[in-house]
Length: 183
Image (cartoon, rainbow, N blue to C red; front, side, top):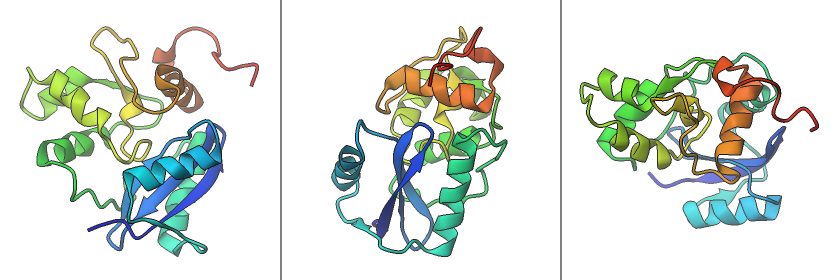
């Protein structure tokens, strides 16, 4: 089902956007350098989505919870309804496992592959997470390389955005000292 609406919203990491259909959240756009750039990115990724003047109540609850998580609240977003019918089956399976990672914790690409019963497909897990349309709700930022390194992150800001999100959640794997203390 194609997206029906989207809304921009402010967070501690910048202006994000939430995209939804009648079945659930179909996309979460992490911040671009400006709100206008975030809006333009949404229109490129979900061309049928229309910016909504009013956000449906269920979508507003999801939006409020994402904002709270990015403000440092210990909130699990695993119960937010998603509409991921457009994603390949393997990707949806990867996303299901990633949604089990609690805030402040991490898992490796290899651990997800093992849970899926395909222990030699950690690269494929990484590729699926790189196409994750609902970052934060499917917490791909909580997935690290086998050596504990950040790995990649396809959102604007790349690995530094991933690191900041993990820091907000209090993940111990981020390393010593606050990376963004000056902000």
